[in-house]
Image (tube, rainbow, N blue to C red; front, side, top):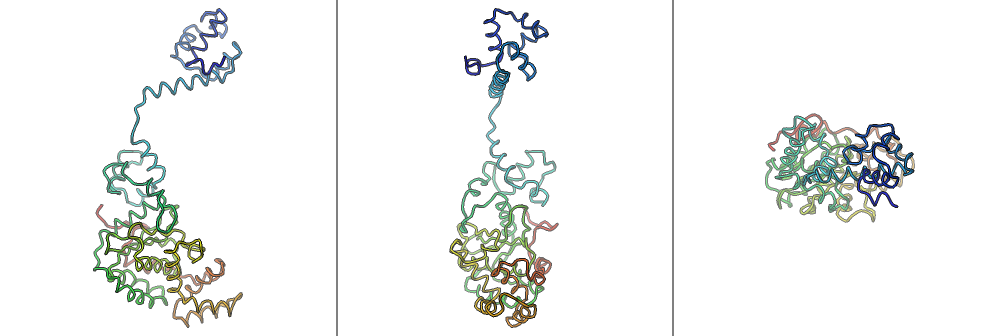
Length: 381
């Protein structure tokens, strides 16, 4: 006899065992040294079989204790299903709270009206407001998280939250009309800023004059995002940076990378999200999508003439003296940190020449639209 399949409740099994022996409930109560009322409740399903009782019944009837406990578990679950009303929002909440960085979004001031993190209704209302949707089911986390960007890697819910914040801020910025024909001159103007980290303060104004919305949003934990290029409409490009690496080489490489996406018209259909844009991802190998190879090549040549760099490496490798790096940078009229950054990339020696990687965030953020590092962008949600 398979007790687990033949009986729906442990009480039914107990009653069958009593009948097979010709015992009454009172006899079982005496054997177990318990009250008759308890046995009656067990058989009627009004009192659950706990682990201790399951062991006692096992000793009396020779049935494994696990059998009684498994029947009890199934019975409890069946009762719960009868009483439970399906919550259509349950799956949506699990996705939102499990994947979106809700606590960080509250901390950063992105979710308006949240007083108590335990108040699900407050959180849901704030998320709907943030994403501009009527209900949590319409927050497009799952489809976008599974969708590939043009770069060819899955976008996480954390990255999408960061992207949406960039979009919120960019949507409220007023800039002149964007003209693709003026972009080469914009890039040339920025080429003149590579000598001094402090010159980066001019970047927000130069980009705004070119009709490009430039936004800096501090990265969220685990996002590992460096930059993004997308378009609010056909004539409104947006560049967002996280500045998660406060280094002159990374700043100029990522910015020029995103500018090339703008120049090529990338990101019109799907945002060009660039995460972990270092090491192999900053190269032009076969594993890099075509759009990224183009942007990486443009960024590398912007930071330092790659032909000149190749000649320098050929002459000086494997030893790169300090005076050689400084002299090479002076020859190209760029900051030594750009030489150091490219040398790190080409030699994979990221532990070398770090003293030249000057910080740049304090120079570029004062004139830009910034959200993070203790500040919340002043926008109307």
